[in-house]
Amino acid sequence: MVSDTFQDDIKECFSSAAIAERISALAQTLNQKFAEQYPNEPVLALCILRGAFMFFSDLVRQLTIPHLQLDFIGLSSYHDAAVSSGSVAVTQWLSLDASDAHLIIVEDIVDTGKSMQVLLEKLRALAPRSITLCALLDKREKRVCDVPLDYSCFQVGEGFFVGYGLDFAQRYRHLPGIYTLTPKTHTPTTHKK
Ligand code: IMP
Ligand code: MG
Figure 1 (tube, rainbow, N blue to C red):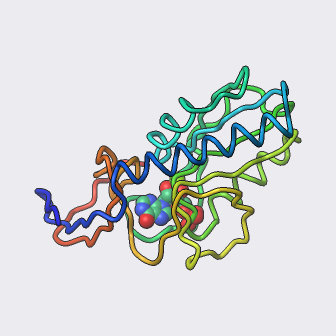
Figure 2: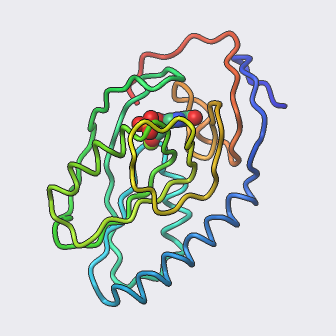
Figure 3: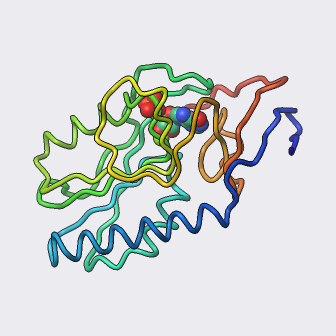
């Protein structure tokens, strides 16, 4: 157990080594899928900010898809709480043209599925060649929307997870592993996600 200055309890559930292993396996799966199904077609990997930034950077460095392009989308739903607000805001949109590409969505965690449902609707409206949805964590028990999650590195149960990009009130994103968090004495910041 590690305690920080804000006295939240955090307990490691996935080490950085375990994360690296699962990401390499996912990269291999994606490399094989795109080589077999869509050779030499345009592919755009989308990082869902901010939570997926570490996962994305570790994943794309292992992708061998020729001419892979990268873009970034900002979504916000938690507003510094540990329970989803249910309303999803797009804080940053694509800068590249997604309409003629195969899209790989790289998300930190699919919880209720509301964020991915909103995003998928917007992306489908652009008529991309295909959409592949990857998440680091799949919190399946909390699912409300039936989103087509193609690949996840880990399935997790109830609880709130931080580290490796995932935050609680903008904290803990920098930690190299993934931890469960029990908030203790804490005053959330008012910064937007
Ligand atoms: P959803 O819309 O409920 O599926 O969740 C949307 C977003 O909430 C995810 O993309 C995460 O950024 C965030 N989130 C959900 N569960 C957790 C968690 O356990 N820790 C940190 N962020 C979470
Ligand atoms: Mg997210």
